Length: 381
Ligand SMILES: NC(=O)c1ccc[n+]([C@@H]2O[C@H](COP(=O)([O-])OP(=O)(O)OC[C@H]3O[C@@H](n4cnc5c(N)ncnc54)[C@H](O)[C@@H]3O)[C@@H](O)[C@H]2O)c1
Ligand SMILES: [Fe+2]
Image (cartoon, rainbow, N blue to C red; front, side):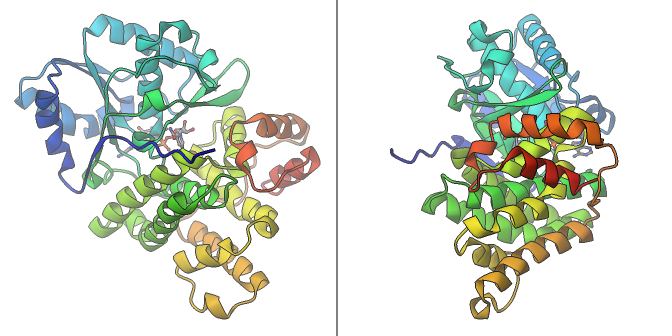
């Protein structure tokens, strides 16, 4: 089977990139925007950085900010109604993965109303039409939803998150402006940055990885390892490096998939509302250890990209240890906790079942038994 690469059509990078939104809207003949953001971003004035530009250009918009982290089916359905009432012809998604993912689901259902129940979008959905045009403006440096063909929705009733994979959801424009990310507090910067590192490492070691995605993932690991500590310290260089690193990771993993780390992270978030990036980061050394013998020489390249010296002189065991140690050190330096005290012994069986049913699991280079998955959850207790 041929390898497929799907990327978003136009993207802008660098400080001040949001200035391109108005000219793009005019050039594409959009008349009214549905601005999808979340309440905190509105409160902290992050959303206004973009809506002020629309106001100045007298472009009408409806602000929809009823989006919660780890968005739910109800969030999406409510958003669909709000979009219909707005009379808008495009969506400007301003926020992290939650705002961008909700926008994708809204945009897909508007043009593919057969999927209005939302649940039927799980996995690779046979939608017929591209979603409403989305201009995606990430405010976190992590999910890369602005360049991925994925979105993730929480099914509250069934206590699970489900992943939707659909090229029809790709934003037409990504505006990756590090100044939109500079208001992130340290903890959020760390978690979302570690999400991006997990994308790059899982994407690099996933079953479907190939030369072109390896290129994206290794460069993403290098950029993230070099810049995440600085981004947590809120330097300009750190923010710019992370904005780019997370996007490049998205160019890769969106096309080849992830692995068991994301399946367990989705499960943890669905059961205990753990922030996505924190869940990914806590599992990363554990899943890297689990996969180590199924990765050929890849951990040598991960260690090199993480900045480890002398990897060519190391034995296989040494460079595998070094890659895992470098990830652990970065996680520690940016303040990711090692334990999650909400996991209960009686939940373990269900957690493992859900993780093995998650859409990311089949990409993992090593198959896992339920007992092995339980053991990995237990390591966080
Ligand atoms: N589509 C994809 O490919 C993809 C990939 C990975 C994860 N996800 C999903 O994305 C969601 C997580 O997204 P996220 O980690 O970006 O966080 P998020 O969108 O859930 O936001 C988390 C919190 O951070 C705040 N925040 C965001 N940007 C800020 C800023 N600049 N300043 C201050 N506060 C800010 C928000 O207001 C919110 O309260 C999860 O649901 C996850 O499953 C999607
Ligand atoms: Fe992720």
